[in-house]
Image (cartoon, rainbow, N blue to C red; front, top):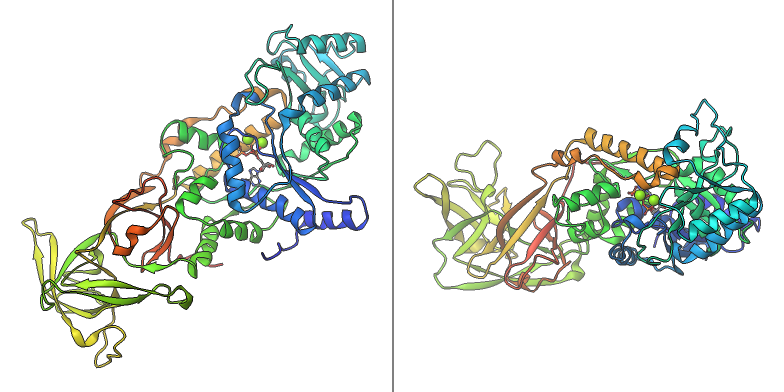
Length: 573
Ligand code: ATP
Ligand code: MG
Ligand code: MG
């Protein structure tokens, strides 16, 4: 593994180790188990794990499961599988919900220090009295409750004496702070909801902004890396660590989220796409989820290289999706066997080839990687070629088949088109060609040259196959970007605490902008040895691109291939 280029977070870690501020670097990847991981998460996974790996530290996988409403064990298992697939092994596996008792104790400590109070204002009233960027907020009328009263009320919150939303515990900081996050934010709320880990044990739950620093501190995390929306939360993060007097002192660092062109990545959007059945589940090969791009055929190596090469910065930027595709191509170039597939077949009968005869021809498996060896492929009187490799009335410079023209069949012979057979509607249904035995591939024949080489599959042994071709789910860049902006706002609201419970309602109108051409299914043929292909096997189909055997749809009779990426793109690295 090539070490990551340096980045500002790495510099900080290095300095902290050099100055002895920390002995060992401890990072964590803290997903909320409310959906499947996407490529953006891969960025955070790679950053956290590679940072600790490079400096001999540790990385925990911690499920940030403090919001019971949206969380589920299905997601926990999927996230673990995705992190492993990417190639990382966590040191500790933790659930934030396992710390609820400790978090409660820290909240009690704050009350005792006069740093937290129980407030009876409704969520709406809290929002109205919070002030704005230019106006200070107003103190809650409940702010001066005595420590005893607060301790009593908080315990009664825990004991279930109040209705959902009736009371909250708030940090007592400063309603005049220029940072809205420091204006007495809520830290505990009453919420009756079944939790996937703690069941019905709790009817109060800590707010994310309070829980997160404590989770980090409890685990001895040294560098808590998060995305830029949380920058304004850092003062509150520090306040929690300071006032709770946690034995360990984690620090938060922010970097900008990975975004990709033509892509909606926000979990809540992906979830809606799954719920509304516009895709075939979280692992639909068009989805930007790790399970989706895995099923599509992207490799962990390519994703890791991509995450490394796109760097870690504080400036928001959108990365071209084709940059990721570039690394996939690079990774598969020498690894994927190259074979022939015809995805839109047209039958060719070679009239001067003996009937009933089948010969085996050698074909190398990867012209750029000799180590991959070779295979034998059958050739006979009937073959399939690609429909688009024939034109009855070709334009100038068309070097493939047309009446009277000769082309090379890859690994086989030259054939010449003698006759075109059509059905009653005038559609071409067969070509009748002749071959020249002297032109056999590998024979050194050079008496005449042809300009076109096309691929083919022998008809009697060809394996019927399905090919799934993809375009982006959302074709309109602008709209995708707009949707992401809305999502950022919601994330900001979520981060700010009080509105956490109602954040996450998304406008479903984006679903109508789905690219109708995002999935095209075609039927064709592959070489006979492909009947042994297993789910997730990857191939380069000559002249078409890289394809992955779909692990869900493939049957013993018929392999299904997902287009991973075409062979070339206009994208320049
Ligand atoms: P989403 O907004 O898609 O729902 P999230 O941030 O809410 O994502 P979490 O489960 O909380 O999802 O994320 C786990 C970790 O992954 C967090 O540390 C988060 O900052 C990071 N992360 C999420 N999206 C990205 C991204 N696009 N780029 C880099 N890191 C990301
Ligand atoms: Mg989150
Ligand atoms: Mg989220």
